[in-house]
Length: 196
Ligand code: HQG
Image (cartoon, rainbow, N blue to C red):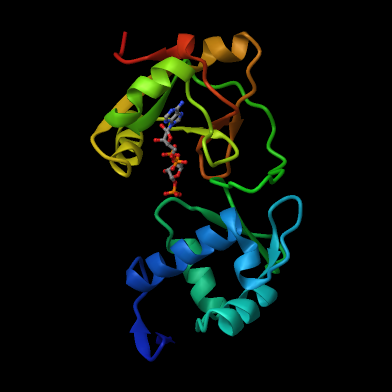
């Protein structure tokens, strides 16, 4: 079936429209549902019909259920999930608003990776990793992903996090639905600049 968005044909797969919708969903579901007067519950879920109606009303979008489904399915990082009954959607991680994702505490691998930019290093090596504007510090399972995350901020640097030791010393780790590791903070004693 041919799908249209603002009069243009939407191809299946990742393209500009899905990137645009993904960015919009990230803004609404992670940071600012109030932008379109949307209710979000304590677990981060919003009603999809209401999301579509409010986005189209307040932001003059042309969202449809098919476009949302296609964006969720083709999303490179699987940033969003639709509930089993198909009625609700939420972001899998990345929130700045306080949300209970109901994640279980998990045992992390020995090492996790954090991608950042060199301009933040002095501050990080002084204060440790802080969640900054988000709810958690985000850690990657592999170095390549961390490098990509770091590039978003400037000249990338990958930090090696002694995750298992942190866990053994009482820190709680969570694994999001889309396999991003989350932790409240990382003190400097668990951060290494070089792989050892
Ligand atoms: C840095 C993306 C100074 C931290 C990614 C990072 C991720 C400090 C920046 C997800 C600091 C915050 C999250 C300290 C931490 N002093 N700087 N003490 N502690 N920082 O965007 O981890 O594509 O909030 O190193 O893939 O970059 O949006 O966090 O550079 O999974 O789905 O402060 O966002 O996912 O930046 O990215 P961010 P992040 P999406």
